[in-house]
Amino acid sequence: MLIVLTGIDGAGKTTAARGAVEAARLAGSKALLLRNHAGRRNLTQWSARSGIPLSPRLADALETMIRTFNVVVSHTRASRFTGLVVMDRHVYCQLGLRSVRGIPRGRFLPWLLRRLPKPDLVIHFDLAPEQALERILLRGTDTETLDELTALSEGYRALPEFPGFLRIDAGGAQNEVLEALTDAINGAAAGAGPISERQSTSLQ
Image 1 (cartoon, rainbow, N blue to C red):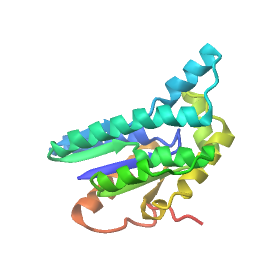
Image 2: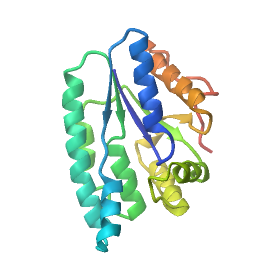
Image 3: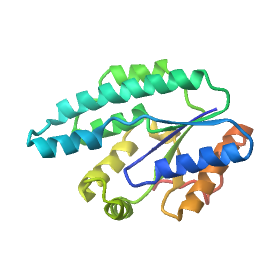
Image 4: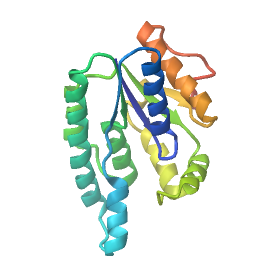
């Protein structure tokens, strides 16, 4: 089973993904965590150190190349694995960033989405940008601003694929978010359909 996680920085995707995979392994199931990063943090840090600004289109081109490579490699690994596969980030994340930067979706990434195996579930970690910023400042590894986080949150919601995402409330404690994620995965595995109102956040 293939699960994809999306959400703004600070939403807790990676932490919850690790927890879900560990929980599955402890329960005796085979599980694999794959990360589809785009190198955005490294590119931002390099730009700041070098004093060479990256235009939105150049940054997108570099990130798209890295993200596409990682996504294709991850799907190749997933196709050879029997068990639960959790992907932290995907092509949807790059499309959301394009919306923020005012860059058209283009043809390649939507084409790639159609060609790749469809995930059993795409789960969006729904979190207020203000709370995400608090988490980011606490960990001290990123340089996101509230405006950037707000724009990315809106960028996700603007995706035509977004209505098909399952949204879980990522604003609670880590154990609560992990429980919601685990319940969503178990529900998908059992073909039980949408999870409860407590676990799924309806957008206004």
